Image (cartoon, rainbow, N blue to C red; front, top):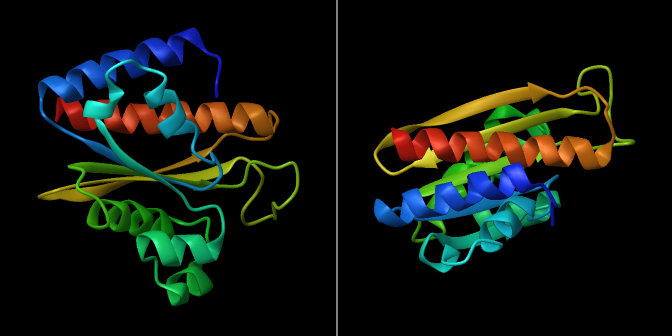
Length: 165
């Protein structure tokens, strides 16, 4: 769990807004390992909003749980825009949620390359009857915990924008 009062306040507002709009959320998380869902469930009343969360840390989990095609992962790598989109769309299809957010990235300290450095994280947000949004962030290497915190922050921003939109 992330101990961040600002993020918790944002999560509280998000849960309240989604509940008022009768919207629900599913998460598909890789490098954050369930931190987005964990933050949302820290909020009383979140059961009305968080429909389910998928921790898809391995490539097999991405395929098995949210239907990311293995050939898509082989072609682009797990940390890529196409896989982030497929994760969000798959989480939406595998749930009863109205919105799904995905996170896949390299939190470090190892695992990076020149093409895909530590701190590279892809996000996607899929919603019923709307095009899937993608965001790529390059956080640099401020450390594993900070990359994961920044990733939760970005996922919340996508969910906030979807609630408003």
